[in-house]
Length: 78
Image (cartoon, rainbow, N blue to C red; front, top):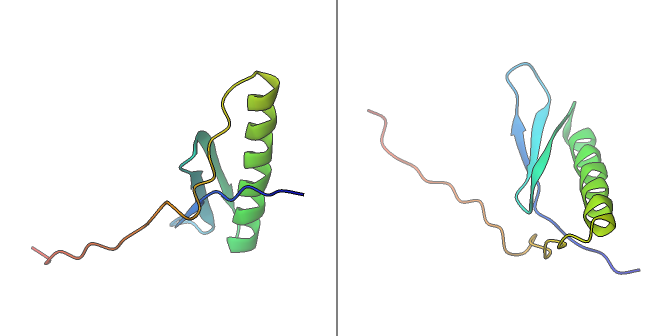
């Protein structure tokens, strides 16, 4: 079975848990209680988005896990 790999961004929430976005799928916004839960929610959301896109004949985003980069930019505090 072939697989598709997509970048997933997890951002900690002040009240706990993580918000999740997927750059290749702008419609995906989900959350999880911890990292494993957030990744599971992302996986489910991606699978659902893929199914909807296939059903509606829409383009499937190219895998981007090796292309998306998150870099840290440090600036002096004011």
